Length: 267
Image 1 (cartoon, rainbow, N blue to C red):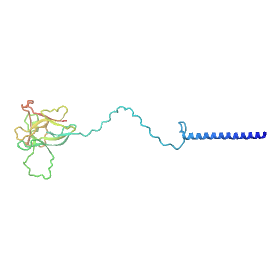
Image 2 (cartoon, helix red, strand yellow; image 1 turned 180 degrees about the horizontal axis):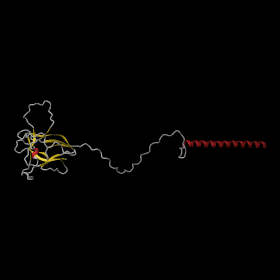
Image 3 (cartoon, one colour; image 1 turned 135 degrees about the vertical axis):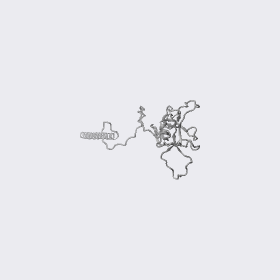
Image 4 (cartoon, helix red, strand yellow; image 1 turned 60 degrees about the vertical axis):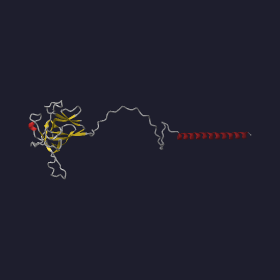
């Protein structure tokens, strides 16, 4: 009756209170689980302090950027060392025991001007620069006398000519073999003492050769303009002879009374 009604109301209220409390506890538990899931899957922001000691693996490199605009050309670098010369030439300076004091010109050896005697019909037709330090090969004999003698060359001049007759007459003429590095062309120009433009003058002097009526046929050579003497050679042996030359009227360009000049040039 009335007591039973009140009892049932009390029981119903108790059940409702317990159900509401269980529902609230379930809601709070769900909120906590959601917060944990968010902390695990969401990376920390810039303002979030991440204290985890386990860093992730490095990411892949990004793509290369576009090439930049080319900058201005830099200044020239320092000059490198000089390379070795690609060419060279040798020549003989007749009437001198040394080479000119020119850049790139050096002495190979000095010697004595020689050739076949003026009175010989055979033999050689050129002048040579004999070394002053002969070395004979093994097996050389002593039976070769008179076959093809090589004689020293003497200055044979006439009084009053361009060179100093008293100083050099009948003396032997020295010679020097010169090497030129860096210049690969060589010419001897008869009839002048000046080189063409662009050429280097090695030396100049007098065009000389054998006397016209002598039997030996020799070449023309350019003898130093102030001829040197080979020491101790004033014996007047008349072997190979060196005479001044002049042009005759058949050239039509030169004075036949004047001694001809010559010049040796390199380039």
